[in-house]
Length: 187
Length: 204
Image (tube, rainbow over all chains, first blue to last red; front, side, top):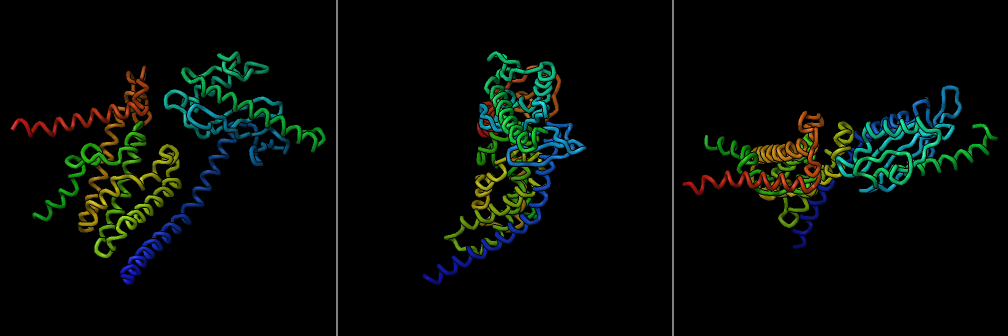
């Protein structure tokens, strides 16, 4: 009996070892590719929401975008407001004057066909034209008295989007305050 | 001759007679979850086929040396290894597919079709028959997913493979790409296949 047990254990040991070896091998091959893809994706997303910046320096929750001459062009801020399904993971680009330059939804779990339209070009371009038009946009959906057009039948998602923008603005003003004091008022 | 037709049967049975979705009814969780678009359905189907063929082959090779008491743990280790390798490969070389299938690729580990075929077929048959069984079952799974996804994407999103189809795109029935739509299409297709299968039995 003990001999049988030993044999069984040894068998499992060998199978698991081979499996571990194969996994380590595939991890080694794919890990650099996956990291490169994620970095490229993040880079693209950042330049999409803050097009005027040429280079970026990341710092936890936000990335600082720099112009060609090395001056600060603006910030790309990551926020995660709570949507209808779960958290909406989004990037917000804000320039020096505190104006929103673009948004991008990185991941979400909103209802397909309804809230999921938040990733669509239509919603984004409509929102950006509102930002362009107004000197100071009231970042609430129209139903709540603001300026932002909500997605039809997806008010909760649209509200979450606005919450994310407000959160980003808050982070923006906190950080410009710090930068202002550290650089002597020169942003 | 007899041997050859047997092997052919192992390949074709999964497509119609023993279709994993419509007849055996295994692996229904991803079936409802990923069939909201054709691209996802085919991606999921082919991923499952890859795992099925690899795991069937290895389990068949191991069938005479694996101790009976640790049969299931061994199968799970083999399956999980292939799924993890596949998941990494998709993440690295097909990032778009990885983004849309998300958690469902790692969940292939617990897809009942794979363990089901290991237990019911691969551990009792030769490697060649097991590979053919894996290909057949994988094809049957892929075709079944694609058929459900065809109706769901066309009616629910007015599109196929993400391309809008005129007329259908005007006013799509959203419910079809949500979970209830998945159950409705799945139920109707099973009913259709059962009607067809039973017809022969009763008219005779």
